[in-house]
Image 1: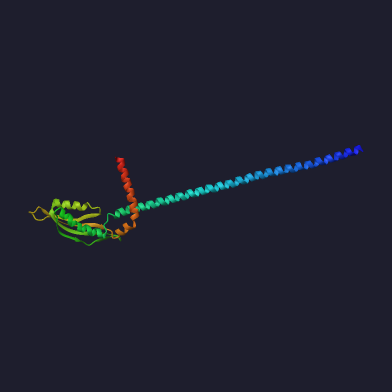
Image 2 (image 1 turned 90 degrees about the vertical axis):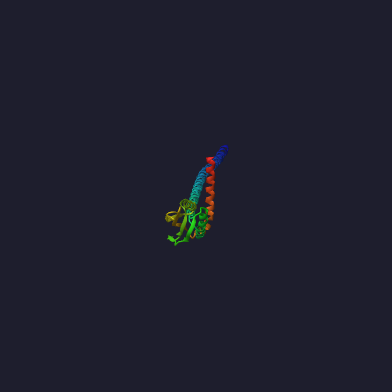
Length: 224
């Protein structure tokens, strides 16, 4: 009887141990699966972060390239504006038709200043210079001393415009006179579209004039 009870208790104990071993196996399996899940999760997170970093880096490169393109465009734009301003400065040396007439009329005042007598002062036939420009002529005959004639021509040459004295002949009035007669033509470069061009480029002219003024002030300070 006692022997039977002892066997029963052993049998119960063995089943209990067997049940506990099942829990151990299950727990170990869960632990392994959790470990793999953690590793896989870390790998996935790393991959995603790497992708994000590449995307961010790529976005940075795109932004940098865009900034460079904008800077180059701005530089090209400024170069174009500078070229236009240089062109305008050259055009400033041409007269408009109105300026040409004013210049022609001003010669009388300059001649009076140096006691030069005007025998004739007429507008000659102009020559076309391409499609846009022309060379206009003022035909003259002056009577004065050679010295005063030289003063007058120097005064005329002080203008900021492109002009030339051409085909001039100077001869003594008569063998007994101290005066000479000068016959010639003044050639003036004229651009009919000058006034419109200056109006259209007013902003560019103002911008670069300010830059030139600042550069001049800086140069003066450095000299002093």
